[in-house]
Length: 389
Image 1 (cartoon, rainbow, N blue to C red):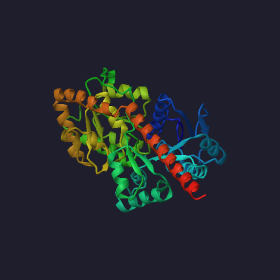
Image 2 (spheres, one colour):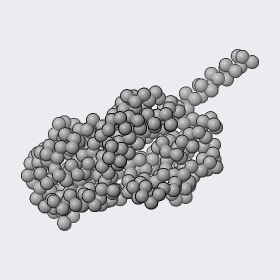
Image 3 (cartoon, rainbow, N blue to C red):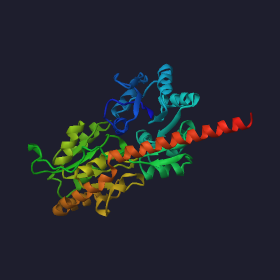
Image 4 (cartoon, helix red, strand yellow):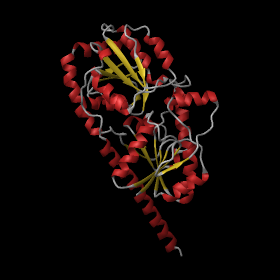
């Protein structure tokens, strides 16, 4: 197949959607497909480069702190790229994708889409994340302006597929995990000198309102073992200074840092527990990677998050937004050291069913189905025309 991926940002692996796009690109190539990309950033083989969309300084600051870039549609580049492809897969529903969709329809190129942008990712930033009405309006807006034109949509979790069904999305929804990179396997490493003797809790994710790192920091303050705990918040974002201030209330200030792929592998290998406190999450591949690496998770049981699916029992769940409940779960896993070490291996083995190769293979199957469906439709159309000649 000649597959074209259209996504606003492809180069910098500083957010989950970009990492997913990169892994899908590489995985499809390994399966023998020709794959090209339309995106912003550096010029490279098999990539059509478009410019970044101009944003006012304040908006630009907010967007880049979230690890995002918006692309400006270029008619000529999009026509050249889409004209080459047998199938176009759209990653995000922004202006680059909207214009690309119109061109794909005009040229008769088969197109599929992914649903990676949860409305809560927007509304929490605006302080309206808990408003059902606003989030519902965004689901409806995404549908009417973009997703209604697709017969096949990739959903990274059963949770988000359910949300789309509740909001009237009529396409076939393919529930396929974004997949765990094969580098994330069970491994333990010695802690750096400055962390020797500490119980290290790590959370990976953007410093944005819906991720709720504040709940974790407050839970550590409430813990009976707070003087032993050191928190690592692996990420970046608008709330960096807020979390620094909150961290000053702890006996051991948290480490706030964005890590490279290799650096994150090390952090997960010498940490003791993983916490995922997010109120809203389509899948949270970062949590799954931590589990695969050998960490027991403690996950917020939010009804707007898919991440609770990774918990094997109630010991790995806490009431969303409840720092005291999280503190009790943290204290349990600190006290039950032997049981935690046993469950680390159980969790790591459980994560293997989300391996990247099998997930990319399922994406390939979705693309094949979309192409075959289009071919059958074309044949039926030709038959009708012939019969009426």
